[in-house]
Amino acid sequence: MHEADHEAAGGSRRPNFVTHLECGMTGARLEAGRVHGLSPDGWPILVRYDLQAAKARVDRDAVWARGGGFWKWRELLPVREADNVVALGEVDTPLVSVGPGVWAKDEGRLPTGSFKARGLAVAVAMAKELGLTRLAMPTNGNAGAALSAYAARAGLSATAVCPDDTPEINLRETALQGAEVLRANGLIHQCGAWVKARAEEGRWFDFSTLKEPYRIEGKKTMGLELAAQWGWALPDVIFYPTGGGTGLIGMWKAFAELIELGWLDDESRPKMVAVQAEGCAPIVRAWKAGERHAAEWKDATTVAMGIRVPKAIGDFLILDAVRESGGWAQAVSDAALLDARARCAAESGLLLCPEGAACLAAYEACRADGRVAASDSAVVFNCATGLKYPMPEVTTRLDLNS
Ligand SMILES: *Cc1c(COP(=O)(O)O)cnc(C)c1O
Image (tube, rainbow, N blue to C red; front, top):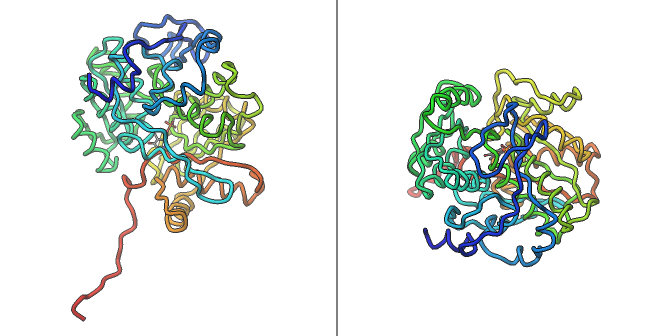
């Protein structure tokens, strides 16, 4: 075990409060400690904890005082054996002010440069704990990079199947970190179908978004961390760039768990806003139509690759959370998000990724039309470092000899 892993693991024993897993749609109970993909009915699976026991034994401020980034929340995570923790120097990500009343939670500071680290670190640790050895997923970029890094560290094999136009940097970082990288002539859900067919033949375990139970648990730590940073409270509105929706679902689950633990008041729950790109907005369309499931979006296109997800298997969990929170789903154009990126970088000094910039553009539109008041506090999620994305060329030349 590496030194960093041991420290993040918090010694060799991890008090664990997992009681069981359940189907996210039907609530059917499933046994913990076994390999699960989707539920028997074909829906994403959620992890459940004995929060009353945790409430009696765990002190929120003692947890928050620990190091180790998201691994500090060990009592609320599914990993049992400290030896299975895979750590790469995780940090709590900062809230950076990007205007009056609005902060960006800058997830670009995490290992592999995106919040995919949270979900994949926990999912890979659980794969190791449950004895899986070969993992594969379809990915638009950042998930593959995080899978590759944490699988390398855990000693597991990983395959990333990427749409042809996945950014070069993501393909290359993923390959360098040891995963097999396959460029495919299709979109992410078509890559997913290919991975699934080979998982059924026993070639690997399907590690797609929400097709295993633990990525949500890792992403949940965004909500735990934000609550602690906010002084055990939350902003009025959260803008989240929604692709597969793991983070939005995870945060909503985190808030419910914190309330049950008595670490957070019910009234502090924020409005959740699912932000998508106009060129790929299946959740926005379903939200407007009052539907619980979102039909596939045809001919998806946007520069914000992380949210170019035409069909999300957890659509009902996203839509339920958005509605329960009193929030909404909103699409922004590529032009608006690129403009928001440029202004934020030049005025606030923070280079957002296009998905984060989409959230800032959505926030600005809501301030303009009154959905968000000047007195409201808001957090936009900047889910990856802006450095991983194409940027406008610099064309000004200086002739030093003239
Ligand atoms: C994956 C990704 C998203 C979407 O995250 P989900 O939780 O799957 O909806 C948004 N932004 C970036 C940068 C991503 O990599």
